[in-house]
Length: 526
Image (cartoon, rainbow, N blue to C red; front, side, top):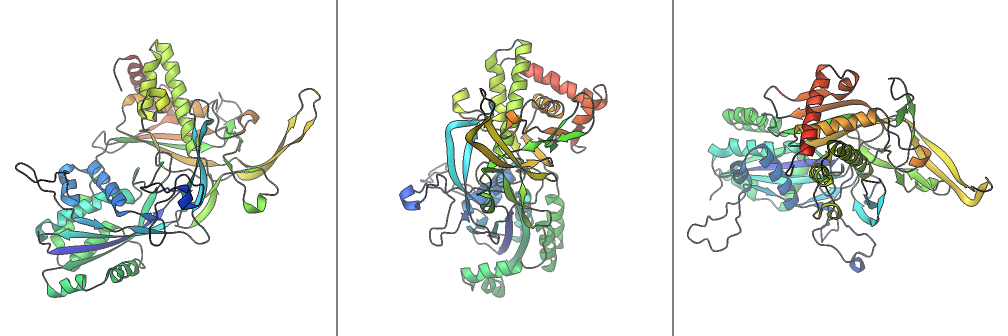
């Protein structure tokens, strides 16, 4: 097939939080000369962390498939059925119209790849599984990837359609909805990424000038020109394509791309938006002021505090709305997800026991939505409910506390048992949970989780629960469902449903709770 047009795209991807893009092949420790269990994927020549072209292509393919159908995905990314003979009845592979290059990571100033300790938290107890601890390399927030893409167009008649499919495939990089996440542990809030800049050039290969303009350059020259084009003001891809198409006299194609790429996301999904405060109510039965609490998500103290502090609350680099990187205290990722999972499991168990349903039934239903370890249900099951990003705390203040071990017999301090911690006092964070293809039963469970966290916080987050740390209270909660009706997303104020159970919001929640009870007591899989 002869291509008559080619589009060159360059985009800058910005990590909004921590990310781990793992290596395809594990490196032996004697070769890595470190104790890192999970290393980043690196370029074998430069040693720089990288985002592979195949990884990005797979993410874009998955996003496009979720928004369209397999025919559209084949048009942009091609297909290879794995056959080798191409005999009678076998279709030859269709080449991809989109080419991508590997992208190397550029870390923010004064930062480097960090090695952190990963743990697996038992959702039942909230503690770390024995032996489930490892070290892994993590790219910090603010890391940038400059990605180069080429879209080959065999005929101008299909140019507008291919550009529309590219826009739909990259919609997950705009910050809309759950979006595209890169690397591992994305369900725990890792890997959030956004495209901040786009650049585009159109080459007509049927024109000698256009042919030489594209082919008479080295790969280094192409990459350099693409990076230089990103120095202008930020522009999103649909706006940029509209400008470039009209510059080349393709007004009809520009109108087609603008109209088709603006279609709403057809996926049926739900998102639970919470405001969580590190505090508890003075009287759980009476709405009133909150009493600030203490939070400790353990981490190694900063270098200037090593001599004074045994452990400190976790701070991480984060990207602000202005695109700047700064360190902020976080509410947690794995521990926060385990808190939601633990509360949901307890509520599902209690409801099943009240309904007289077998224990295995609620465990199967709970594992379908929240994931299950092999020890629980025989085979690992990934979680469908996902934490969109690691929440950062706003407000509050760091506080240094000292505790000691008291001899229960004599009532005095035990020698050598004095501990100093830098905890975080007060503050709040915005938390978003995403649920793909939800039904009313899981929406009912999420309403119960909000009720638990808005009244008496029986479950806590982080360390020091025995001393009163880790109490969280929900002060705002909206459960938004997309793709169910043509009129737009449906939003339910769960706090209003708690305050006025007989109101319209309460009626919706009661219907979902009836669906939850039915699902927990019926036969069959979820």
